[in-house]
Length: 140
Figure (spheres, rainbow, N blue to C red):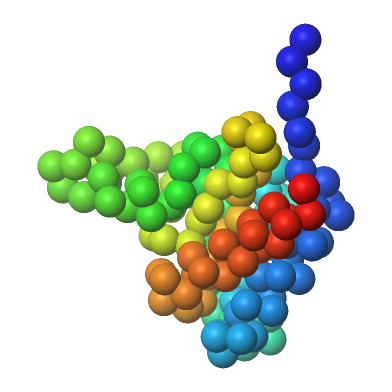
């Protein structure tokens, strides 16, 4: 039997705190979502001035990164016309995100979930997501 690590609610809370701190540091209120390895929502937070239209986007970025085990930026790079994943964004009733800001979470090379952020630029979203992952990795 293979034993794999699992992302816990406490892990998600730790990540959320770090992601929120990073968002405040860069001056962008964010919608932040964290999912388990099946893409199921563990934790969501909408900062005071985060975009209402970014709620679902953040959740879907986390879903895509966690379930597909790749960053949403990676999918964006290969999903344009003529690309090997062209049209992938229309799969799963449009939940599949191809905008930067969704990152998979791995522990000991095992996929455990994803984090998705939205409301800033693609680079800002990704930096906030990475801050959450970095905080989790620092505790292992």
